[in-house]
Length: 65
Image (cartoon, rainbow, N blue to C red; front, side, top):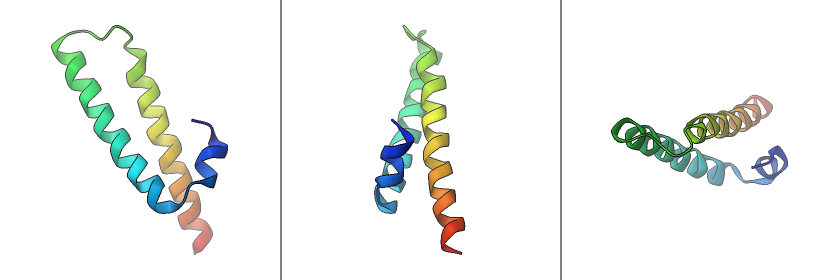
C-alpha cells in the first residue's frame, strides 16, 4: 500500500486497517510457529505496513495539536 493511499484515508478507516493488520500479523506468526510459511518475508512486510499506518496516524495527531 502506497503512502499516498494512506494519506487520503479518513482516520477511522486507518484505525480499522491498523487493527486488521495487527490481527493478520498475529495469525501469520502463529501459523509460522506451527509450520513454516512458504514465504516468511510476509511477516516482515506486515510489520512494515503496520508501521506505515501508525506513522500516518501519529502525523495526523501531531498536526491536529
